[in-house]
Amino acid sequence: MDAEHTPTPRHERIGSKYEIVRVADRGPGTVLYEARNVRTDRQVHIELLVVGAEDDADARRRFLREAKLAAHLTHGNIINVYDMGETGSGSLYVVQERVDGESLSRYLRRVGPLPLSEAADIVLSLMDALSAAHAAGIIHGSVTTEQVRLVELNSLRRIPKLLDLGLAWQLGREGITRLTVGVRPDGGPPLVAPELLKHDRVTDPRVDVWGICAVLFHCLTGRLPFDATSPRRLSRQLLTEDAPLVSSVRSGIHSRVDAYLAKGLAREPADRFVDMREASIELRSIVEEIGDSTVEWEERPTDTWRAAPRASRDAAPSEPIRYGVLVPGQVRDSDGIATALREAIGRPCDVVGYSGYSELVDAIGEGEVDLACLPPVAYVRSQLGGGALLLLGVERAGRLGYASALLGRTGVVDTIEQVRGKRAAWVDKWSAAGYLAPRAALVERGIDPDRELASQGFLGSYDAVLEALTDGTAHVGAAYCSVGAKGHLARSAWSKDHPVTVLAVRGPIPGEVICGRPDLDVKLAMRTVRGLTDPKRGERLREVLGVSRFLMTDPKAYESLTDAF
Image (cartoon, rainbow, N blue to C red; front, side, top):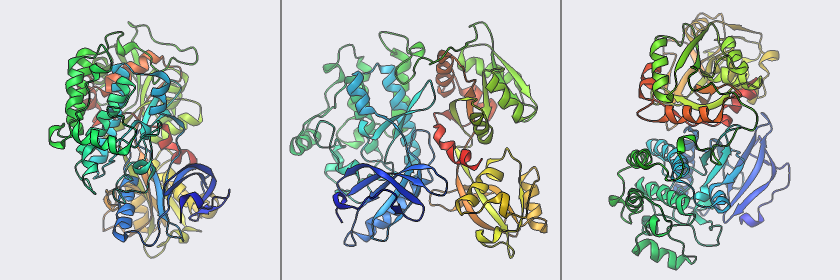
C-alpha cells in the first residue's frame, strides 16, 4: 500500500491504544502521525512504515529487533522510542517521543553560520548521543542537520535531539524511512557518507563520524560540504572529491578546525577518527585552546543559551553558591563536595544539609539553595509545584537510567490481571521503581491501584518488599532492575530464591538530575553545565559523588513519572 494513499481519518487507531490526531508528515513509504495514547493521554509521534508482504522477511525482523534496541537506549539528546509493532495490514510502526522545536537546518538558514562555541556545544551533545548508540550496537547511518531538532529544555536552554535513531539502516539501502529517501530543504538528494554509496549494509560506526563532522561543517559555514543538487553529481563529489576547507568558505577559521574536519570528512573510514569518543576529545581540545575569536563563549548567551525571560537573582561572584544535599544520605564529605564544586564551577560553594527530600525540594523551589541533586521522583514533585530548573542528568556506573519490575507472589498473582483485590507493598512515595512506575504500569493496563487493590503499604526498602512477598503478607510489589540491550533482565533486586513472578517491566526510568533554583541566573546555569560536563574540571566532583558523568537530559524523559501522579 502506497503511503500517499494510507487512510488517516482522525481518531483512527494504530494498535490498540494509539489514536491518530493528524498527519504530521509524509515521505516515500512512510507516514508520520501525531497521536495520543488513549490510556495515559501522552502525546506521541508514530512513524508508520508502509511495507508489503513481498518485502524481505529478514529485513523486517531486523527492523523490529533494532527498533527494540533503540527503545532501551536512554539519552537526553536522543528521541525516546516508546513502543513498536505491526498493523493488521503488515505495516510496521514505531511510537516515539513527540518533540516540538526547530530543526537545526532551519535554525542555520535563519541565523547563518554559528560561532565555534555554539556549534561545538550542539555537536558535542550529539557526539555523546551517538557514542551511547554505538555502545548499544546501533548505527544511525545518516546524521544531518535535518535530523536534529532543537528542543526546549527549560526557560533558559534548548538542546539538540537526534531523530530516527536506529531506523536508518533497518530495511536496506533503498530504505523506507524519511531519513534515507528524503530530500534536502533545497531540493537536493540527502547527504550521506561515501561508503553508503558503495555498500548495501554498513556496520562501521565511523559512518556517523563522517555525518557528525558534516553537521559541524554546516554549523560553521551555513552550507553543506557537498552541495550538488543532482544525485549523480552528488555521488561523484562524495566518491572522488575531498571536502573543502572550512577556511575556504568562511574567514577567520583556525587551522586546527580545518585539519579536524579534513580528517572527520575523509572519504575512507580508516582515515577518520577511530571512533566518536576520539572525535569528541579532539573537538573539546580545539575549543579549549582557541575558543571564539570574537567573544568569550563561557559568558555568551546564544540562541541555544538564551537570556532569562524574567528577573533572576545571581549570587555575587564572591558570595558562595549554595548546594543542597540530603543528610545523611548524600553527604559523606561535605568539604570535598564544596571543593569539587568550586573546581568545576569556579565559584566558592557551601553545602547545605536537609533531613528529607520534601525539605530539599522546598529549598530549591524557594531559592534557599542554588543547586541540588534530586532523584527522579523528587524532581517530578518539584515540577508539579512549579519548582526546580533542570540542568543536567546524572549517570552512575555507566547507566543513565534503570527500570521497574511489577512483581506478583508466584502461585497467587501470576498475571497482571490477577492483582485486583490483592495486597500491595511499595517502597515509599519517593521511589520511582518501587512505587510510581509500577503504579503507572497498572494504570496502562486499565487497573486503578487506589480502587482495585485490597490495600497498599509502604515498607521503606526493596528488601522489605521482597520479604513481604516471600512470607505472603503482600501479594503484589515492585523492585528495581536493569534491562539489557536485547530486552532481557540484566540485573535485579531479587534472586531465584524469591517466589516472585515478573508481571510487567516499565522503563527506562530516568536517573537523578542536577537542578537549579527557578530564578537561577543564565550565566551561573551556563557555568554549572559547562563546568560539570568538562572532563577535567568536573573530574573531582564525579569522583566525590560517585558519578560516571553529567550530561544534558530532557525533561520529557520524566513525563511517564508525572503521569503516574
